[in-house]
Image (cartoon, rainbow, N blue to C red; front, side):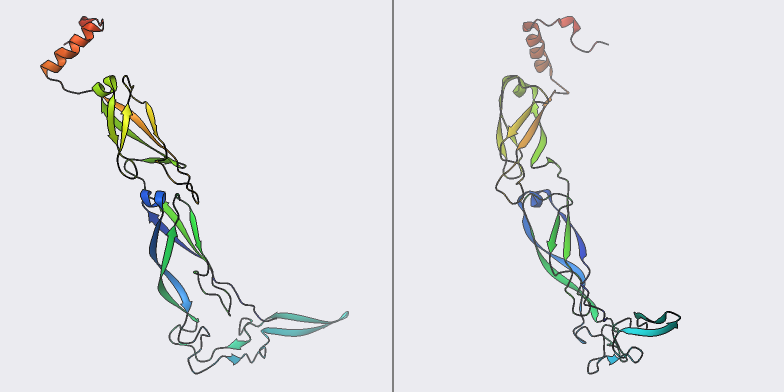
Length: 257
């Protein structure tokens, strides 16, 4: 039979977004190169003012039938008409605007709503924004594939984030508070006395949103205790005094030549 309407091809668009946009979501606009139905010929491919003509080979059926006689009787062989490719019509005067294809390339601005909590590889589907269909077929879909740029401070594991934060060895020993970065404003973190390097603290609800919910992950802060590389004499003597009070063998302390 005649060639049926054909759905348009799907389009893929790769979109790079920031770590924060992935965490909190964002509305943005993208420019997508796509094929649209030619406005001059309305997709027919014929010169405006003219129309496709019935194919003289298949007389508009889109098929060529041939009869073959054998000893068992007659066989009718049906194949797609090669002249009109099964369309049933041929174009004599092609549209100059689209060169007879019925489609023109055009950049379209598409609004994209990125939900909070997406990650690299997440696909957003916008239906009907792909390439137009053939012979009255529906347009394909547009698939936007997200790539989340790495953050200079945070790493992500699912809906949780983590970072490292340095404190002085005095603060680690005596305890106190320190200010740590989060995805929003900075937060105060209480450091208990005697905190060891590589200790991990949790900031509840400071992570990434779970897609489609109000549930939010946590932020984990790994503490790095910084040892001073240089000390003046007074600082050094105070440390030696501390070592003495702690029962350290002073003979085994300090750099010896």
